[in-house]
Length: 617
Image (cartoon, rainbow, N blue to C red):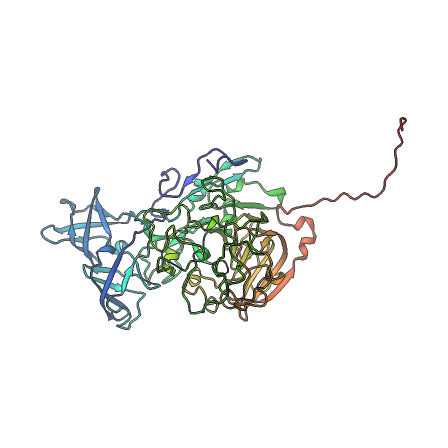
């Protein structure tokens, strides 16, 4: 109702992203993955492990927490072992299943032949393999592991574990890292996508866009095929693996995780954490939706989908996309349903403490919306998933790196959905020639631009290019080498998030942070207290080292950031500055070459006047 009551928005119901969407709203089949859900908290404990060359056998107290559940004609059963062609120790398998198909909860199927149901039943696979039923992946520490087979007390054919026999000593805990009840949505909320046609009419295209896909590749291990290569938007991705792609076309909901990255600037109160620290602050975990610019261009051109070529072309100058994500947005009045569109957490400066520990007092530089009051309502988690467990519970705060004695680690951040209002848009696949005729993206959320955008990495004058603009709460530029996983595995060491030379060509309208007197406590960097200056108006969260950031465009500071309001800080944990190849785009001096929707201002100048005398004067 909040969405459909907005101006110009049609009355077609938004599509739920919590797993309750109908088949007519979201198509799920072999080429259309399902929405991501939690695998549920699962653990096993190692007793030893052995090196089998490239693969490893891990001995555990019980592999059962990670066993797949099989379904046949509506009857579910489990098997305590799996090899390439057999399931063994099957319990509850119904009789008479010769030639039938076994289905996993996510929809993976395989043809089977029953060998025996006496004692420990064995099911032999024919015309297929048990590959679709690989054991659930698990973490040890921050490391993901995938295995091809299992018995009741072993995982076999495991990758993601090095050959040394002491890598997984006894009593190492293996975990799914899931912190909510099995089956709980990792995406949640509602989505509505509207298109303005050439005749000026608005219409709902949500299902059309979702049925082009909304999932991305995995980011660690062996990189598998893109599960939805035509997707225009993506809000989830394939789970990471230890080297296997058996699941690359999976229709199993637990094989997908939400899109997320760690923004150290937003997470840390100060730039003074040991670079070796793996601590992750909850407020720096940014769940995002990605917009595939090239696939959007293909849709506009009629190459994919059905109606993209009917979109309104802004004065024959190109196209505009507006984005807003308010999932988990809070109200500044307790109990009130009205969202603010702001993060709602400002206790960030705290000058008397070397570590910036929140003091509950409004300090200079914290009042981002000028209401003369400290806002902290955004620190309260909202829409907690069922079964929420530490460290993602109601007690969590934005600056927490541990809750209830449990540290927030990379697997928690990647596998679970964010419980604060930390939402963003990421622009991807926007290199030379991938933009439509002209392209403006406007978002009330922060925007991350990942990789070359409308430009060659080394020469921003190389064609083709399009008039382009990015308008957002804040804009962060990510290089071609950025990987979301690295941001979690190395949250405080920018040296492990090394950038490479990357090119960007677009106008940018964005917010900045407030300035405040430099605190003396802890001797922070000399620029702490400023907004970073014009040369840091475009944000970075990588170590650029000798790499060049080539930018051609025009930057405009219009407002104070209300969502990405983390203080400017450099250069221990957040970023290392690039060689700045910044240039103004002189094409913006020609009105016809401006990006679509460029704000235009009209001045009326009084050149002369004359006095009029009326008869009654």
